[in-house]
Length: 371
Image 1: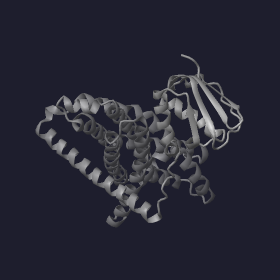
Image 2: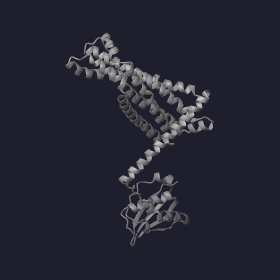
Image 3: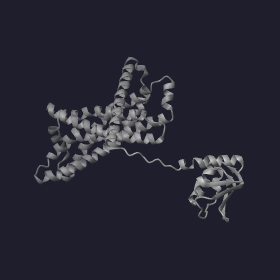
Image 4: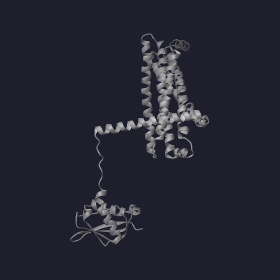
């Protein structure tokens, strides 16, 4: 295969551009940097006597080179072309102008943007409701036929969601307790009320901080992992393979993960309560001089069991929302890697927003009920 070549020469009445070699898509990489002198817009002859082969890609590249030199593609006259080469060249020349048109993105008005976003949100809400309905139906089916429950998958998810998350949850809440007690102790010490650090740390950790922060941790760690796992299975057609085998993807993939979250999150919140209080106890002893036994004695007075239970009650609700969001976003992944990443990010954002909103609703409800 001969490398494509191009040259030009000026004659008395016009300019002649000569092409040679094989102008084929597979051979264009061998084309030397084509530098033509300025060509007139009209009156350019294209001599193809030495042209060995030509396809549409080669003809398009040839016309681009001549256009960049100043020639009008519609005013080029080709000579010494074979019938086949002439037909290819004429076809590309006729459509050359259309191929250079770049469609500008349509500018969307504010109202159109609001309407499109509202429609997308409505479709997302309807899809979530439909997803919850399918899960509920699957749970009722499992209650009727307990033998269909995927116990091994459930145990594997418990290990992933709960056991492997214990060190991270404990460390995060321990440090949170240290920081909270340190900042609170600086203020309390000014008024001689250092002992009230015990009240603030224990109540804040058990009622608000541990449930919310541990839920956000689980959303970013386990929720994102669930979406990525299910999404990767969707891309690899493994979800379709489960259906072909006569199994329910909801039974195999969704229900074990949601149940694992429902069990793991309350336990992680309790561990977070303990870790946060231990962190506060450490700071109280080192910074404020409150001994461990005095801290524990005060803790027994100011931390009722009801407060701890109020924090633990939130955890299953957080877990249910995180699990539903994560699994649904995983099953709605399209067959490309970009969709997996986008849905994983969306899972984290939706889960965190849901946790914050639900926690605010719990706070208002508890106050109204007198808890």
